[in-house]
Amino acid sequence: MTDEPIVQNPQLIHLIQLLRADQNEETQAAFYAALKTAKFILPVGTTRDGDPTIVMITDDQGQDFLPIFTDQANFGKSPDHDQYAVATINDCANFLYEDHDIQGVAINPYGENMLLSRANLFYVAKPDSAKNGEAVRIGEPPRETATLVKHLRDYLAKLRTVHAAYLTTMIRADDTQSLLLVVDADKGTDLHAVVAFAEAYLPETTQFHVSPNDNELGRYVSGEFAPFYQR
Image 1 (cartoon, one colour):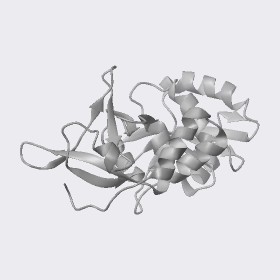
Image 2 (spheres, one colour):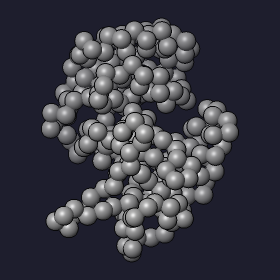
Image 3 (cartoon, helix red, strand yellow):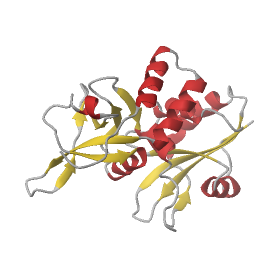
Image 4 (cartoon, one colour):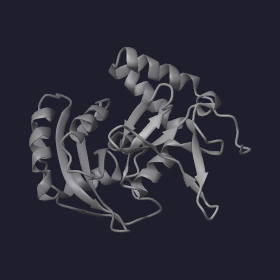
C-alpha cells in the first residue's frame, strides 16, 4: 500500500444516496460541488516494464470506465488491487481526455456504483479551458451534428432560463478535437441536465464539453459565432 493520506468522503456518499432517492436540482448542485473538492482512491497497476498504469473496469456492453473510490472500505472491495494513487475529479478528467475509449468514471463500482459520463465529467472539471496559455482554435461544427442541433433546439426552447446556445468545434494545440456547446443562461441553470440530454444525440466517440458564456472561452464563442438557438 502506498503512503498516501487517508481518503474519506462521507458527505459525498450521503449525497449520492440522496440523489438515488430523489434526484432534485438542489441535491444535484450539492453533489457536483462536493465532487469538485473531493479526493478519491484510484487503483493502479503495473505494466510488464514495471511502470504504473491506471486500472479500468468494463461493463456488460464492453465499455470501459475509470473506477474511483471514496474511502478505504470501498477500495477494499476492488478485486486484485492493493496499489493506489489519490486523485481529484480533475485528474480523472485528464485521463479521459487522453483516452477517448474511457466512457466515464464509476464511483464506488462495488458499492453505490455512481456513473458519471464523459460529458458530465468534463463539465464538472472544465478541462475545456485552455491551460497555461495553451492556444485553442474554434471552428464550425461538423455536419454530423445536425441531429444533435435539431433536438437541442427543441429541448432548450422548454428551458425558460436559457437565452441562446452556440455549438462549435474546439481544436487544442495537440490537434485533439471536441464539440463545445456554449450556453447563455441565467445563473443557477442546471447545465448538467443539458449535458445528459445532448449525450443521446452525439456522434459516436465524439468528445463533448459544455461551458457557460460568462468565461473567456464562452465570451469569445458568443462574440464570434451565430447561435443555433436563441429565445
